[in-house]
Figure 1 (cartoon, rainbow over the protein chains, first blue to last red):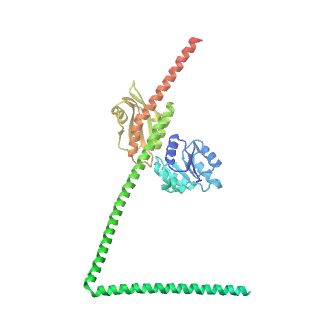
Figure 2: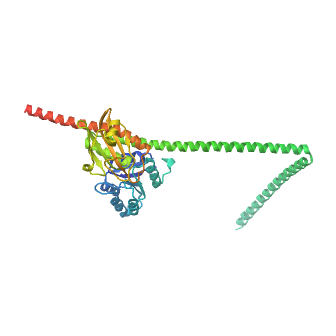
Figure 3: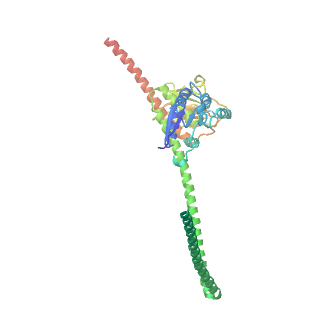
Length: 130
Length: 269
């Protein structure tokens, strides 16, 4: 049986979560799990295995940058791909997130096909197979 | 021991036999090939001596070359047609991807707007749509007081609500856009000016104006409005207005219901 990919979306905006789910549903054999803030995201990411995590920066309880640094502090999660999706478009924000260990940095408003392209790249999925 | 010797001898003899067989086959093949070569040489010699035969051979070869050239040309033309089709498909694919992206945004926006009857929740969703799907950094949502004709700011992002000025119906970009029932745009200035929005989206239910959304500043990475943004403005103008109106009616009816219930309780006690 083919292994299913698991993607975690950590985003406080339900509208944004729904939009990301809508985009990522086009990937075959993929389960999408939602977390509504950084703390919820940390709980889920430490309790289970994920192939990709999408993280917003500005979130209540725990922000995305803190979450990334905690994830990268865990040996088991060092290699797990992380994509930041944020309104913060300044170069220094991008540099900070990448320095903390994010693999990609996308700014809002997002294009569904761009998210898909990045997810396919990090999950090593050929676009024809989706 | 002696059996071993005989077995080895048999093996060696077998090898010799197979070698002899192979040599005979090679000689046979050699003979056939030599005969074929002789035939070709004689044919060429005949052709070289006989002009008629030479011309015949030449015309046959020329015909074959012409046929191959036609096939080659045909193949080139087919490749060009296929490349053209491929380009068209690639272009169409991109168009469909964009349409798909636009539809996803519009679907999510309208779905969220009509997912609640709680007024504050509706405002939160409007704010989420304007930030996440349009890419605005500073904006405000206004509600129109029909009696006074004044737009009061009821929700804002990127600026304190108390700093957002009220607007008179018919005046300025906001008042004008609501009077005209059309989204209005202004040239972007160098600084954020709360009295001069970049865009004003009127919120109307049928012919009834209920408010407006004014965007004062876009996110740093957002340089201009896209065709999808215009679709979202149209969606917001209708659907956000309906959602706000429905939530207002619902909260009013809830309040009235509570009052009536209070009276009934008072009378029946």
